[in-house]
Image (cartoon, rainbow, N blue to C red):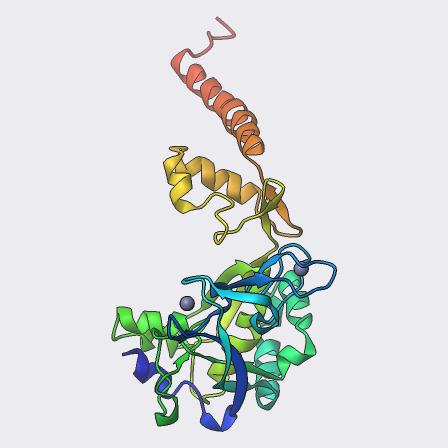
Length: 302
Ligand SMILES: [Zn+2]
Ligand SMILES: [Zn+2]
């Protein structure tokens, strides 16, 4: 029961109620998530088509209410602005507990993670909105908030486990016997090094906290960036459709893992690495060993 998990996940004394303006679509009868709003970038020199949270042309981060001529991506109607109340987690009240947690794990964090965590803007450390106006998700266990759900990232790890097994506490409330390792791109680091542990520490209960985090830079696609939203890149189902053996994908993605800087995924490079590293170097080595076994050289003394 995910609700049961969240009933004690957050101490309400650590929460702040804030009223914020948000775009509401009267046709769809719902508040619009950032990705469901399209419009024009409000930056005077830009004025290019932009989506809810960012302009792809000038790269400026946006609030959907700032867009010029916003439209609901589902029905095309112009949304209106409505006030809605949300719960915010007061991170400053958890600062000491978080610092203590960080001291216990710092050695296992790579430089990338430490730098990204430090780079989180000051205003981001004040308080973070943890509820959403959505029809699906984990309901907030308070009468006043029956129409809200919790933002499921990253506490969704726990609710997903609890949907999967009634024994979820064996994993998530067992820090003595469970070591939590997390892997991600740098854009997700702060949610896992600040938000996630703060949320769990705020309950005062014995949760399994992240022990080791491995964060990478970005893997870019050809000359731009991967974008599932815009259909740019190659994803799991595309990789399967190519019929290229999974071992080749594994090899290429591992040697191309963006450990210290952004790396590029390029089809021509994949082909070159397949031909040079796997076929030529590894293939030749295997061929020589097998030929040697099949036809042993004559006795040098004979
Ligand atoms: Zn709509
Ligand atoms: Zn722009």
